[in-house]
Length: 314
Image (cartoon, rainbow, N blue to C red; front, side, top):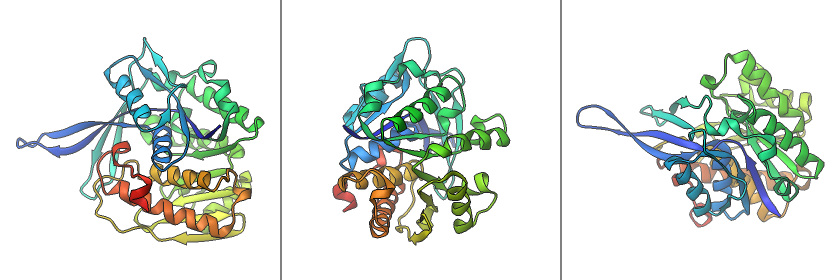
């Protein structure tokens, strides 16, 4: 049994890491992609994880496959395409470490993952399935991802979801919101950021926004990341806030994925895979642990290379 199986995109983040003497931005190829990031973050913190996604049969695709394996994630469900290139995201950084994205993705490998390419045995043998909204932007990856979530629920696993909004990947905001909301009725744990809360609820108020989502879709546990301010959680009618960890920010890319990977890995260490198995004190402890892991990632460059080990967080 896997503690965690993630489904969706794995891509190359071409991240700005400096400027040449001539003033030209310099970029480094970092492995990335939200679901893959979550799988690696959880694996580096001790969970038994696997990833299903599609990459091209090119240098970048081989790098991603090697990265997954080298970080302790089962890659048996990865599909290699001979006809589509590996997806690229160009990540430009601002002085405060925040980032903007430009994607080279239309017709690229991650969008072409089909339902029949998802390993059924892996779905049957996981405690938790995780995915994000990026794989919902295009077909056939959208239908494949939603099908996997529905099937894994039938097998008794928990479903976790990160809306992970990237405006440039959607034709318009209204379409994005509609499609991003569609999986919510399947979700046991929702991880959402302070940027996405008003998009999905119309309010940036933590209490009101999370209550709206919980009431509308019956989501048992909502984790709201607040950047440097830490994280807010809603567990039924119980809410709380845990402060962030102060660090000198190098690159925020991957910090939210580290947060959630850390949370799910900590659940696995407790051998608890559903919100109904957790107490309020346990949730608070898990959020504090996750804030620490995310802080370490934000203090270093890249997504996957910046993620900490369990020893570092402890």
